[in-house]
Length: 299
Image (cartoon, rainbow, N blue to C red):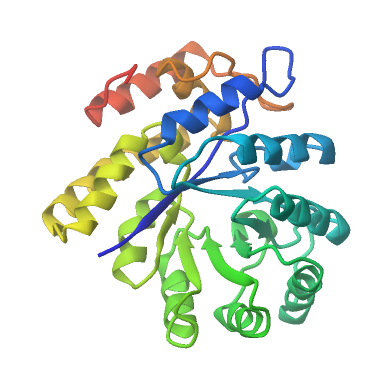
């Protein structure tokens, strides 16, 4: 049973808050060989704090990385449609495999407004588009019916990242779209929903934990590849425990960066304001979580 795991990578800055090309590419190299691909400028990548210039620099970094068989995608989520289109086209011109775009946030939108938003973007780019559904951040969920309408109308709308704790919505999308458009890709947005997604007929997960322990997710995919359900269940329990990482700090991005530093992958843990660095007690929590999961720090 085939599956995919994509890493929404953190964005690494130096200690003065400047984009650090070398450390970002070090992270890409760290996950290479373990996961199917990566996404720059997702939520984990602090897209909401990056201006257009920095966003384009990250697209260039991803494009220049010698990624072999890995796929590389970029977030193109902006509140202004013109800016989303500009980033999508820039990613396409630089040879990335597609873009991920969250629906507009702050105000709740009707189904027709959501359809019109993605339609406008799809008409202005040839880039492959993944709808990004994240109700906890937008205040509403994109329905399976809207996803189907968009995928049916626009050939370049090719998939969905469904960041919802409840797996029922994702299963509904899979059931409604896959029978009509088999190549439409549906990914879970939470790491612990990976197995359910694949067993329901989805494509896998775009999950943040694969930043910090990609070897776990390589092994989980391999268990699916050989139809070893006992091993699938073992890794499900391991990841269920690792989900505690998300609770060390709110938001979780400083936790990910500190863990990557502990693993010897990056040097700087700088996050864009107003995010703060972790306290020593929180670092101890990380160490305990990894110890319970039987994962060594550093790797």
